[in-house]
Length: 123
Image 1 (cartoon, rainbow, N blue to C red):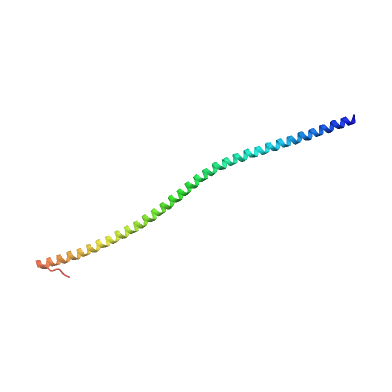
Image 2: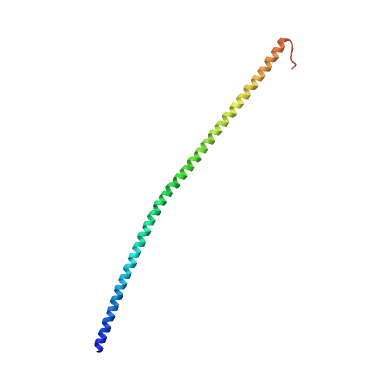
């Protein structure tokens, strides 16, 4: 009877070991499957993130290009304003010179007319 009990206990022990081994295999498979699903989900989200990042990168590049273009335009406009101001200053100086010449010429004509009329001007 002890042989039967030992044999039965031995068989039960082997069965428990087999059950534990299959349970461990099943648990390992489930963990691996869960990790694969998590990896797929993370990869999908990273793909979406990369697409958004590419869009943001393009927008950033366009924004910096626009800022650069605006700075260039302002610099060009500043240069044009300096040229315009210089031209205007030169024009005003020329007009003042012409006005002074006309004033001197008008005085000269006035003095000559007075001399001709017999009213000499005092110098």
